[in-house]
Image (cartoon, rainbow, N blue to C red; front, side, top):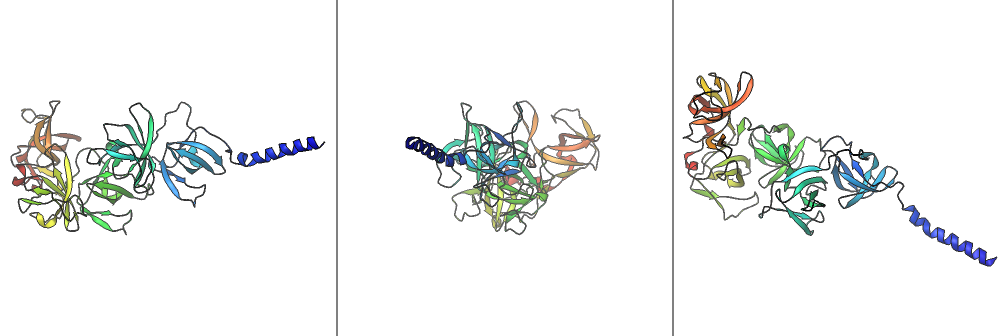
Length: 422
């Protein structure tokens, strides 16, 4: 009898020892779910440290990013995304359709690489973390942002040479949205670049109309009306009401071209630089993009078609004070032929009437590798005979070449003679 009771007690104790382990088993196990139905491509689901809306947010993940569900309890699911573990609200998770295609993460491009033209990827989103890879646009396939960790870090995914998916963390100031979504253009003069997404935030400086800025991934609410941008070394926020996302060609304004008072001037990489060994020569083309305290943010033409560097020069170093951008709108001065493709041909595609409005794209006729005639500069030199324009002919938008003498346009588009010998 005692032996039987002892056996029963032993079995009971063994069962009690299993209870704590059973308590932590998932209420329902899933192999994979998708983040979805959160309002749009740029909206995100919060990943929290604990299953509570009061818990710290340790990441925000875009629609359709894969999340492996480890367990589910009540309104919360414990998930892991690219090695990062936390809790998400179950109502924002949905199983993928069988054999269905879905969009996992936002495609991105390396826009501001380090000196070696690469960007570091780290095992943790913090300063001093171990670097696990160096990437650029040519060395990596399928580079995507899964989510934002904070204002400084992005959780990314890419495929290595063998096609294996890899995960890590990269600086939010190094990567931009890809393709036509990567940039925006300022639409009015003196647009504030602010330190935070609020009109009450301090202004870093002001940009002129027609400045193209890079769009960065924003850790704030997607529909807050602000765009996080970068241009050169400047990172800040611009009110979306003063930005255009139209990507085809140039806008109706252009950053003003100017020249130095002297043969050279100190060139600074950032606003914080007080000493520099670099200098800007008076023979180099540059445009003034904006005013930042007592310095101008400038774009430097590298003499390759549409290739630029950025920097700062003292406002006192330029020949004239710049207060606005240059208009690219022009008026036809006389009945004139609009030449398509090659200005040397005698035939014309359409006729521009005197007084009609056109938009100037640039000048400097060159022939590219495909044999097409195109323009080499956004601005105009004194010896340019033809200007490349966009116009409405018979209610259709048309592009082509017209003689410079047949147009009236803002003389600010003409490159100073000093700056055409570089």
